[in-house]
Length: 75
Image (cartoon, rainbow, N blue to C red; front, top):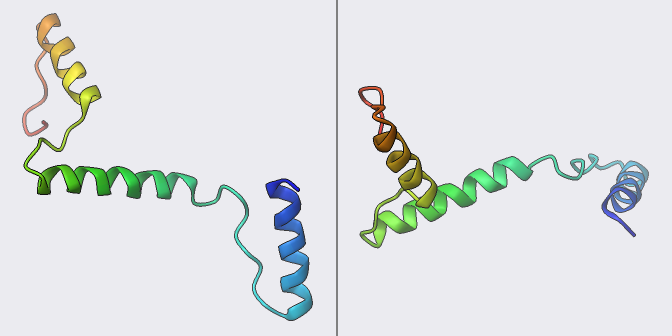
């Protein structure tokens, strides 16, 4: 049974019981990823490491090599 079939089954069961329908599959995927990113950043800060990851450092290196500066107030 895939996620869509399970959702349809759960929706049918909720309707029969008079309960609210469950959220559709994938509804909160982006929110979960954002929460994971924020948690990892927070853990880095608590451990005394920089909160930014390798992508941020690579972008900063590329901008410095190209001679471009970041706008004021942005890290």
